[in-house]
Length: 87
Image (cartoon, rainbow, N blue to C red; front, side, top):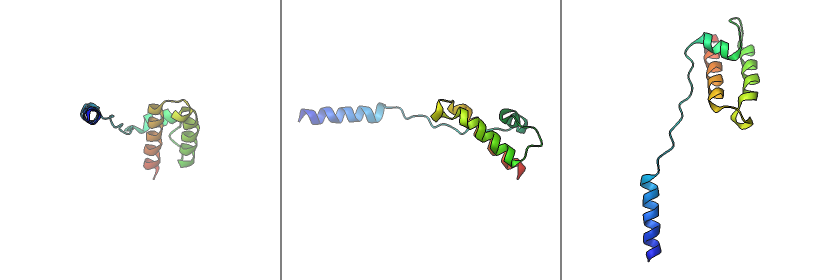
């Protein structure tokens, strides 16, 4: 009977004292110039060049390959911004 009480106390402590992990917000890019600089592109770059630059950078910075998650988010946001602006 004691183990039930101990298990209940442990569960309650875990349930009410454990802090939830904060949700990460997607990185946002608001400036096309900053996005182009991050991807290393000029103003005349088309969608194919944007995708190629993104692919090249993410291959080196992806978290699965030991890179930075924040930098990868910024690179993805820059790609999304530039592709949306081109369409």
